[in-house]
Image (cartoon, rainbow, N blue to C red; front, side, top):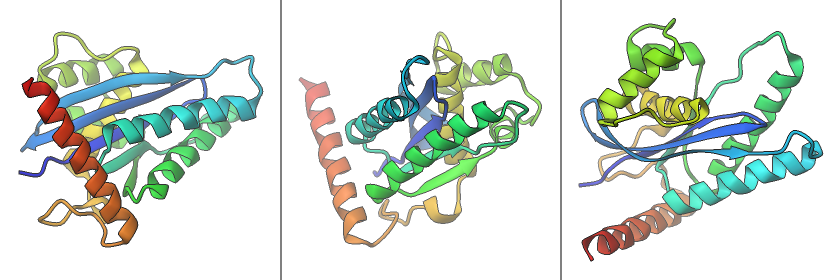
Length: 197
């Protein structure tokens, strides 16, 4: 059986959340990984973006998601925060596209509604649902990692459009997508082989 793996990304210049989940059918899922990629505030912008890009690249290569979901940038009063978030979002979308991985974007209110049923839920409510759905003793930390997991779950439960997979688990027919899928399947076969030892 083909398992759908989704990587959620909560874009941020100081802390970029990354959450990877595998679909188990229905509204069930398994947490694969949750972490943050950090960049130092005192570093020049180009170096900070490079740090985030390298971290995202490494996560995409290691976990081989079938789809990537990124939180959509929305208006905030602090323009520098919006700019940094938008720049990191662009990097995430580009890194996925270069690997033939389909992408989607979800607003914060869409994520809250998908995970908790309310577009006004707070972080604690989201984390409580994550713990229940993923059968965790504690929510992923820091909060950026939990947010990324919630974004991945949103894609699993409400995704559609360009990220929808066909019956064989394929997202696109391009040579790049076929190669990427073969790489993911080989990586998962190695993971299964290692876990049996």
